[in-house]
Amino acid sequence: MTYLPVLVAFVKALIMISVVMGMAAYAVLAERKIAGWIQGRHGPNRTLLPLLGHIPILGRILTRIGIFQPVADGLKFIFKEDPVPGHVNLLYYFLAPCVAFIPAMTTMVVLPFGEMDGAPLVLANIDIGMLFILAVSSLGVYGIILAGWAANSKYPFLGGIRASAQMISYELAMGLSILPAFLWANAPGTETGLSLFNVVQSQDTVWLVFWQPLSALIFLVALFAETNRLPFDMPEAETELVSGYHTEYGSMKFGLFFVGEYTHIVIGSGVLVILYFGGWNFLPGFASPWPEGWLGGVFSTLWFLGKVLTVVFFFIWIRWTLPRFRYDQVMRLGWTVLLPLALANLILNAILIALFENWIV
Amino acid sequence: MAFKKLERRPLSWAERTYLPQILMGLKITLWNLFKKKVTLEYPDVRPVIPNGYRGIPTLVKDPRGREKCVSCQLCEFVCPPKAIRIQPGEISAEAENAHVEKAPREFDIDMLRCIYCGFCQEVCPEEAIFLQNVFSLNGYSREELVFSKSKLYEMGGTLPDEHYKWEKKRRAAEENEVHG
Image 1 (cartoon, each protein chain N blue to C red):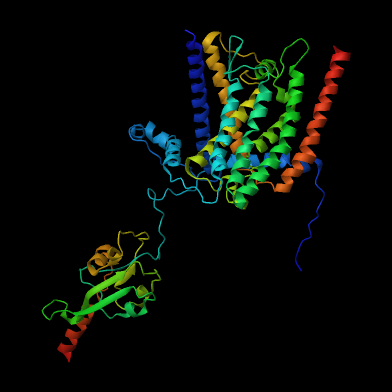
Image 2 (cartoon, helix red, strand yellow; image 1 turned 60 degrees about the vertical axis):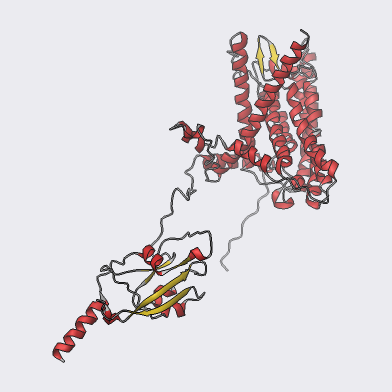
């Protein structure tokens, strides 16, 4: 019976993938609905599934809120004609969507999403979780650069250049902004390391966002830039670059970029919640009321998912509120504001911790 | 010159971070999120057509069912895109309305050519052609959208106007005979 653990791990991974993919699909729907509502429209409200949509009252409500829309979107991606432009580099052209999609799906492996009897609910509880996420998620930009390069046409090319410049600029600020969080989480005598689970456990009374608002803000801004969301969607900037790096892509290849992008948002929101918003801990100042056993696991997971969805809503909300930055403004903000601020924040926190340990305790 | 010179004061520190402005923007969009939607769900909900709307032109009959058109062809001549084609015809001597003398034998309006200008309605001395409030037409072929006389009457219906010009003319003619 040596294959049983493998099978269990496989099933767990499958469940995790389906949940995250489902969330990504419905994040697309949420984007469209909220965009509509903010602009005084209804958003998608016509898609109807036979049988399910014809349940007397419930079916009507489900149709109106567009519950079936992601199904239609997915089918559209699959059945659309898939033209390949004649001027592309075929190998890289086909490779790019995969390279963009796989890192987005890989980061979820180390993302803890709940707690059961003091143990994390996570696919792989490694103690360098944060490092893994930073390393792998920034690989996703290679997909974008590769797409821009392989498409062999000017708008995707500009999009790819912008993506790489933006990624380099904001990765620094992002990395520096999470260090204070880990510095404070690693109180003497604890073995937090870079483990995401232990960061959450250290926030059981005070969420880090109240303790480290500046780090949280820098991380949030950098996260927007890393996920290529408005106001930082330089790589695709519809009004300037047609649709940027995926201009030459259609059908499911575009779908992979699209889903990858939304998976990035979901995972990024998860990381934000874990680092600064207490993960699955209940409200700040209250002990988590989750019961023992598997029920506690379910409750903590649901609570965590609720927080993640709130952050995803915030992402969408920001998108339909702020206009896009100009390219040079993005660069200026990254290098002359966020990076020095993150550095100063790190040094300040290091000094504070040194003072705290040597004179007060 | 009536213009006001605005003082351009330097931005305060809080304003230069843009964060208060972003929060204000978020407040506005959140407020919009719950406002009433302005979309008209078109095929299910039809817009209110105002009076005097210029939709498709159709022929009308008077309340007694007489076709009002006397095939004077003014509309045919005035029609800028030449969408109207009329073949005039005689009214037979036995008919009740024989004194009207003429009626269209064929009356076609090519709805694909029509520009809904309303000149035909303006020019008609008999008030026989009116623009309706129908604004969306469709069909599977070009021929289908050339509306014949029967189709035009079917869509136009009756004009509830108790004027009866040709009745009055007949009566006047009869009185003239009596007194003349």
